[in-house]
Amino acid sequence: MEAADEDRLLQAAAHARGQSHSPYSRFAVGAALLDEQGRLHAGANIENAAYPEGLCAEAVALAHLVMAGGRRVVAAAVVADSGQPITPCGGCRQKLREFAAGDAPVLSGGVTAEGGAVLRLRATMAGLLPHSFGPDHLT
Ligand SMILES: O=c1ccn([C@H]2C[C@H](O)[C@@H](CO)O2)c(=O)[nH]1
Image 1 (spheres, rainbow, N blue to C red):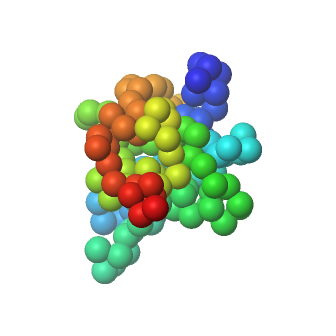
Image 2 (cartoon, rainbow, N blue to C red):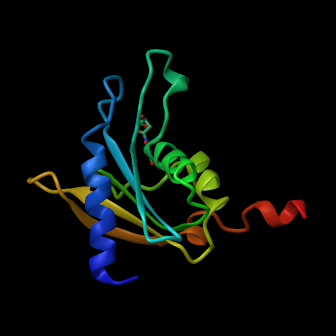
């Protein structure tokens, strides 16, 4: 993946983070996904007063991708202001894996003073979720 495409993905995640509804954790997360048609789909975490009902940014972005007719997650980016690089939670790794190849890049970004994103970690789907269960197991 070219640096310019990585940056486009990270900045889309940073922009989406601005829509986060996270009054309980006060931990705003943004995610962006690149689909097989070259389109970007973004999401932010949406928390709920009934705490377990909250949605992760990655799940919201994935819902946008699928509803827009996307069928593959070619690359993903997650952005948050955290002490260590943010990575998708276990549940979101599985959700993304449904649509992503093992070598799909998963970028982790931190937040700049200007509200943009800076690359902090470059991972892959299979690196985050090794020996994973997926659609092929059901055929
Ligand atoms: O990869 C992650 C990790 C956490 N969160 C959200 C869930 C919750 O709203 C808040 C704190 O866990 O961050 C995400 O959206 N994505």
